[in-house]
Image (cartoon, rainbow, N blue to C red; front, side):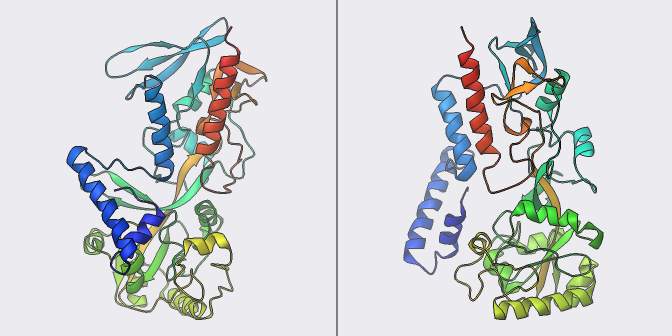
Length: 399
């Protein structure tokens, strides 16, 4: 069942509030009815809802969408791109687009060579992105004479992630966007048991902090909390009220210790450092002021906390055993660097000037954000904007 942050609040308070109970019941009833008819729920929220609406519009306009199809190259005529070479399990052939081709394949995120050359060491091993985002569009654009940008603050956008192996051998990657890091009673520590960042900061800045402090042992880092926290808010793949906690402990996704010292021993991190950090955190929880990293000092961070908790919605004690932790790694959630384009989203040649008939948008396009992350939507927003610009430019050139 797909939910947003407002839904989660209602679900958690369903037993305490009549309005929350009513809205939660409606959500669950719709999901049950959906599953009786379909293989998944049909309610979409946030970015999924936006993309779903775009796809619905394509269908209404009669646009054909071919899934399971790879684009392997471009077709040119008189130095103009007029189509693409395609391959799927049925055929290999050409798809003509005599007025222009727009590259929008998701960027380089799963391209092994580009990852090694563009991302920092140690190379991020995990990403919540689909494995099919293999950099085809960027590679094709480079082969056509285009080039990728440089000078970005970061070549991708970061998020902290935790991972576990599923029964079928595949890897589940959980991006820690908003649900646990900012809540009161969780700290992120390095191998010395010490904090290195405000846990409630935005996910891109959190990932940057992991690399900036990597000599201290922040890759991986560890999210640490107590029994009260994990019951109330969950932790990564652990759901609130912790119904699936025993299984995730037995699998090794969650590490458990009856004392802070025992937990540190299980994690193989410095127990003295972790004990001191927990003591300091408990003092911050009482005063409401994080004098080291300022957790909860701004409206963004407070919004990620628990507004019912006082005096600081992001600072809570870590006191009630047993104690829990998970390993957290830097993960990339989208490319910033990509093919350089002009104001019309046309791909630029290495020797300057646009490649006739070839456009790029989304993560295939060099991001206007240049590796800075001002807020959610900075990938889908420019993708829609420059996709529209490219389409208008193509339409304007049709005689």
